[in-house]
Image (cartoon, rainbow, N blue to C red; front, side, top):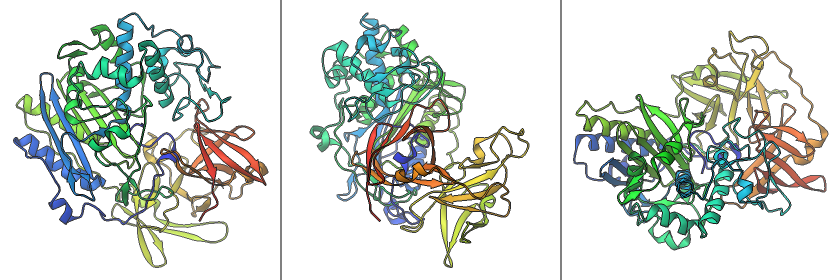
Length: 594
């Protein structure tokens, strides 16, 4: 359900499995036999060639694609495999989970109810659902706030917690900040059910799917539709870092009716959905929402940098620009699927794509390129150049990280650079490192330095005003500042910390004694959980590379902004160890394993 780019919670995207630096699945031989659709036009050939390269680079088993203009579906296609083991090619009827694109369906349903006079978007949601387990200490949460991710609620994976007395606690005044919140859309689904008088699956089918002739789409993910679905894949190990070419394995069955991301669809049906958006809410048999409600949906209310530097958020969908055109866009990340939709309102074309694997990225590059190709073909213009596919083993500033780093006990980490590639020297061997984001890298060799991310830190940026950035910012990449980045002076690997000769800050740190019981490995049996590792780094309690900021007692804030409502709490102290770690509402149990 998360959006593109790095997850808001690193513990959920540590993901898994280490791998070799070369493709494990899409070898040259496999790529030569990759199932692909027939291409009838030049733009289709260009797009198909790009997708083949993209899937290889991204290690995606299969992809589904739907293209439309404002009048008709232009193309539906499948690539790669819906089932790798059985070598079943993706076809146009395979269901793919669309994840957070579901949020736009929720918005449409509620806007319908607004048109019908059943819902006031500026009314506190507690007026409609007084039994919600939320603590709105910073101010009333209007329906508008939930639709725009500005409610102040934490991004929990669900509304109701295991503890019946627990409350979802607000962290800032509604409207002040954009904070992506799956919980908010879970609440909106409950609101839709109450106002409509039937479960979400019936509500969305009657109000959106049937009017748009989306006959293949299911409103909730269940075992009943599993036979029609593509097999979803996830990382083989869920307790290690996951490199791009890591080993994949089939994901377990998922049953889900949480309206933050519970719809599964086909490319044909998603083309119909995108066509309705292109037509400002008009379906084949009438309006889905009024013109006024569609205008509300597509209004940019608040900046949404998690989507792009230029994106804002409307109701259930991001509002952005592409080549000067207004577009609606969103992504969706599930346990084993990742999706993207681009709707060019000014250009009159749209694209949807989904892959059956979750590896921390979304196929946004595919939908964006498809929209540009569609526009160029329709306007009889030269087709745009094929976008470059970034090599994760390369980074322009690789040389910044080269050199030797030493810890307090004299142990060394040595990094070497060759061109744009960074390597870790280990026992006479060179381990290629994959750049993830910022100043972070991971090993690409299965089982070797696969437990943690290498997080480099820089000295104060050159030209920065005194006292603004910290003198050493571990984990903050050069792309995070407009200043010229300072030199790399430190690197951490889990709780191990190393510095180079340029480091001039304190070298010894003392952690509070009360942190001791919290240190350890925790595991959740939730499909969204996996492992979480708490340790001490430079005197601070750290969770999988993310510093925890104390709020009081055993409760900590996730994230560096003081207003962030996401929290981690250590519970059930027994024999000197916390036995449960609750992260953003999900419980993880301590496990004593290698």
